[in-house]
Length: 495
Image (tube, rainbow, N blue to C red; front, side):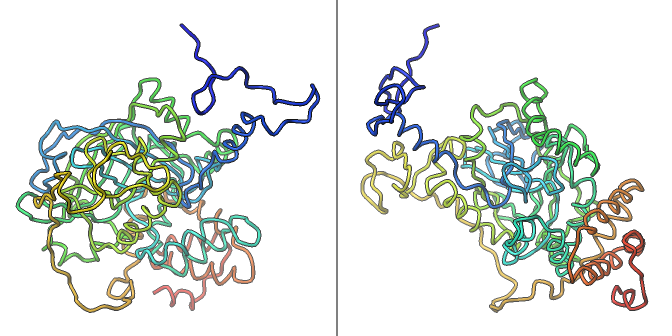
């Protein structure tokens, strides 16, 4: 096998890669050593801004295959018949930690999927939990600030986390999931994934239904206990990355089964809760899971930075037959995600291999940093024109629908939607077994013991009221182990 010649960035062969050009063997270094300059200049520019959330992540390519017919709900070509398949890319991540943080930290896990379909790229940007902490995107920056570091000390703070959660009771459902062992999954292969938001599907008769997406791991759910997660963080902070890569490279390809829940527009009008509230779930007894297909990850990217770090996902990347809902968190993400990518990767991030639609892209967006204009060549950059024969396809027209109100205001997110406790209470009493409940309480205690400062008692008491409202046993056990005296006043506030 012939060896390759060492070259400069312009492709010209060069004779060495270790010694700077100097005056004499001991220097000084000459300014004309452009190879040294090129290497150093590129080196200090190797990194791009890390994601503001989901910075630590792992990714893999794979295939999605349709196994069940759902064409009655959607006209998306991918789901038009059983057996259809497409290439896909998945990125899993923690949320609050930086790029060097531990994979096993107590945190929700990102579950972002990109499907390369013939109708364009479809991104489903979810988590390993079916709900979220807040239900209005206006609160998102404040929430994420509490999951990061204190401005003064640059330290994580249990105080600010529990302060925020206790002042925003809609967070309780997700807090209980986070504080359970589901908050420390055993890598990425052993966790479920969820679209979390409510989306819509439109069929070829232009009939709309509301849907939620679920991905059930076929490897079986497996979690770390808190003690195991902390131990693994010290021994191998890249455990989940290593586990995913090793499994794929050994031919043990991880798989997930995709399901949807379907709610008609009439059912949505009569639903007990707001069907577009991301802090709530739809009970499976009322809206059963409908199997759709299988996702298999079978290819580790050849370069992490090019394919995982530079990958971009946005809920606004949808395809014909799948659309949005009035979910306020979803609506905010439609703007913030692509805007974050334009800042972090660049205005032409969609032209990178991992993000590029492998089929046609015909539009009039041109130039900008790092533009690859080979696909456009000499085509006009304006519309309409007499030259390129690009025509809008009216069959892809957006579905028309009515709004519930024509009145504009900053409506309180909790008006007529203030039941923050029924579903968390059922999660604790029905979905968790005795071991789950015990671990949940111990994890809550361990976290809340980190609350410090003059507001400690106030924050703890306020959060205890939420626990009591969800389940009396939960509140009593947390209070007892925190050595909090439960008086009549607190019980009255919990009603």
